[in-house]
Image (cartoon, rainbow, N blue to C red; front, top):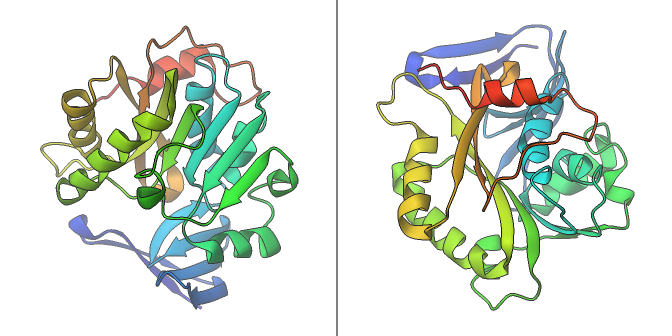
Amino acid sequence: MEYSEDTWPEFGVKHVWKNSQRLDSHVTSRGTHLEMVHRPGWGIACYMDNAIQSCEVDEYLYHVSLVHPVMSCGDAKHVMIIGGGEGATAREILKWPVQKVDMYEWDADVVVMFKDKYPQWAKGAWDDKRLSVYFDDIFEVTKAPPTKLYDVIVIDLFDPEQENLPQWEDLLKNLKKWMRPHARMVIFSGIRNVLRQKQNYELLADMIKDKMRLVKVTPYKVFIPSFSGESTFLLIANPIAEQEFSVPSHLTQEIWESYKVFNY
């Protein structure tokens, strides 16, 4: 079969994957069209509403870059994950000497599918006793008084856009109540787009600096081949300690410094 992926609709770019195989296709209880597609040379890829979410061949680059910089900023015992339904974010966090990881993923169908049929993403993380998974809406959960405090919060949600910045503002204001005094946070902040005068990560960073009064916001990026572009992240830490990437990965001090350089 051929699978068509609207990679960059702004550019009129569409990828047509020939000789591919659709392994799963269904609409989740949350209304998301979830597809797992095997593509020659790339392995299995996860699509949600025709948008690429994760691919076997390079998900490692994304999840290591998301997790390890924030985890290397200091000692972390209690970690919150928001999103991360494939289990790969938890996999990378659990490489660190954490005591407890609470994962909030609102779409249970995504977790069930990856847990039962695609364990190569989590690589055993689902069975780690330190991990607890909650199928709750984090926007509602964080409105309530905190039940616990976290050292690190990892957010892997929707791309920031001008129209959803109020949602981000509400979430981050509420999350501050759930963070220890010297806690830090990392946020996936979208794919860079040369057509935009102001990038999504800049919109979110400006809002954080203006509304959250957080001391240090460090944007960084990494090229993900499956995304046909650079994923951007915001590292929020007070203060950001000297990076020491003690967990084996592709990240070194030199690579980390290059991730903080934006060429356009």
